Each structure stands twice: as structure tokens, then as C-alpha cells.
Image (tube, rainbow, N blue to C red):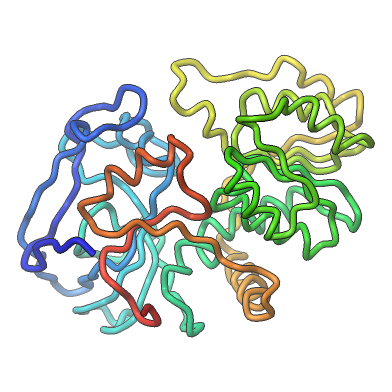
Amino acid sequence: MIAFNEQKNCQWRIAKRPNGNVKESDFLYDETEIPTIENGEILLKTLYLNIAPVMRMYMSGESVANEASLNIGDVIHGRGVAEVIKSKHPSYHVGEIHQGQIGWQTFKKSKVTTAEKFRKIKDYKLPYSIGLSTLGMTGFSAYFGFIDCGKPKKNETVVISGAAGGVGTNVVQLAKIYGCRVIGIAGSDQKCELIEALGCDGVINYKKENVRNSIEALCADGIDIYFDNVGGEILTICLDNLAKKSRVVLCGSISEYLNDKPFGPTNYTKLRKTNSLMQGFFVYNYEDQFHVAEKNLARWIQEKKIKPIEHMFDGFQNMPKALASIYDGKNSGVAMCRIRKGPYEN
């Protein structure tokens, strides 16, 4: 792991608004003093930081996911897993490990506000990176998007775009738990091999195959649930191949994030023809049910019905490169950066 200055709070800030994919000159590296805390505050030491497409949107000055827009020079938003190393807060204790809004920095002083959405990670005898993958917002997005919005039934045909990504790999495994037939779409032979190993009954490499022809061949009786992580043309193709009373779940649209103009499907009226439903969701609208999702997901992990898939980058200095790689499609599973090794890691 690349060393960084442990005597300072190392930070990545916005140097300028990105044009296209993020590049090195869009980021400003900074070192500040490690914060001192006052009554009602805690000091956190960062262990892992999430890498997600939404971070480029933060850098662009957009207000998304209930986060305030960022100005040039601000520390970049991002969820992380961190250990409490000092506390003057009665409800938070030294040694606890929490996930929440840490930002791109190696230490954080916090008043533990509602906006920071901190959540204690239970000790499941697993690496605490699990708090950013299956037992974090990624896993919860898969859980509520698929189960609550998708309403799966046994033997239904489920198509998942971005199936090798963080949410997608979890949805593949959830769909198999529910007894569904699963078709996964991914962007390389390696990713297709991964999702096939996770249980996909059919796979489509969208960079090599004609997706429309493959969908029509694999889903001759139509798609019962389409779980959309990419938007764009693949959404259009799936809308053309819906079964009666199907459900389209809108989770993400990474294929559109670098576009100047949003994509709009011209064939949305196919929903009327098949009595189908299209539904978006925001994971934090389920916050009062997170404990249910965590309990079930943890049980399925322990029963080896779900395998967390994590793409781990190493070193705080690699955060900008890690974010750029998301848009190059180089990662499988949940992308994150290991800042320091946590418990249960070799």
C-alpha cells in the first residue's frame, strides 16, 4: 500500500470542473492539521472510501443524493468506513467502526449530524469494507430496488444491466435466491465469466454482441423484471421486450452521466401495451428499514448464498485514478479504496 503522511489530514479537493471523464488536473491534493474535537464531536480515522459515479457529479457542482453542491476547493463528497479514535460524544465510543459521509480525507471531525448518515457496522467477523458493499448503501440499493420495486416471483425472467457492478452483482445473487431466471449484461468476457459464476443463466457482452438480438433470443417470452443500472440504449431495447405485467426498476444510468443532454427513451409507451410498471427509487427513502435489509443480507452471506464482490484500489493517492476507472468500465463489484487496513484483513 502506498504510504501517506499519517501526521496530517490528507485530502483531495476539487481543482476544476471535469469535462468528460475526470483527469488528474481536476483534483487538488492538500494536507491539513488533524482536527481537534470539542464536546459533542468525534474524530474518525478513515479505513475505506467508496468510489462511485455520483462523485463526478459532485465535482461538476451538481446537488445530488441529498448532498449540497460543491465549490472549487471543497473536499470531495464520499461515503467511507472509519474508526472512532477520539470521542467527546456520549453515544459514540473509541474503537467503534462506522460508515457514513467521510469525504475524500484520511481523518474527519464530526458532530454526527443527520446529514452525515452515520451507521455503526456490526462485527460479522468480516472485513469492515463490507459496510461499503453488501451491508452498505450498495447492498441496500440492490435489496430494496429488486425486492420492493421488482417484486420478484419464482421462475420469472430477470435482466440486469451493469450486472458486474456493485449493485448488479448483488441483484444477480438476490434473483437466484428468489428462484428467478437471470440474464446479466456486462462489458467484457471477464465480467461475463464473473456474473455467470454468481448464477446468471445467460450473459450478454454488450461490447461484442448485438444486445437487441441477444435479448430477443434469451428472453423469447419477454422480460418480467428489468433492473436498470445503465440507462441509454439498453433501457430502450429492454422496453421493447417486456412481458405482460413486467416491472422496470430504475437504479442508475451510468451510460448517460458523461453526456451533455439526458437520454430519453422514445418507446416508453410500451409500458402501456404490456400493463407494465417503471419505478425509480432512492435508497435513503428506506432508511427506517435498513436494519431489516442488513439482517437478511448478513444471513445470506453467512449461508453463502451471497458473496460480496469488491474491487479494491490501494492507497489514498490513487483515489483520482480509481474514480476515472469507473467510467472506463474497469472494475467489477463495488469499487472502493483501501486507505488503511482494517480488522479481519490479512
